[in-house]
Image (cartoon, rainbow, N blue to C red; front, side):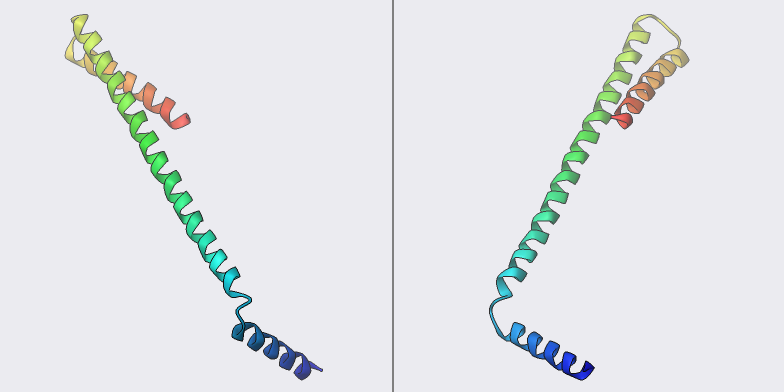
Length: 97
């Protein structure tokens, strides 16, 4: 019985491989896989640009805080602390978004 089943399976595979019936299915699956790869790449690039923008905004906020502290005639260490506090606050807001 088992030998008959194997022979039947082999004949089915030979018939499938010699015909053109599965060609379009394979081509469609390959196209779907390529489309998924491009979609993943698009998501990665979009995420890269979003993270770059958040880092730029955090740096701008730190610079603004430093300028405000400088205008208030604070010491160098106070200016640095204000800039660092602003950068940390904005960077943590970016990571939670």
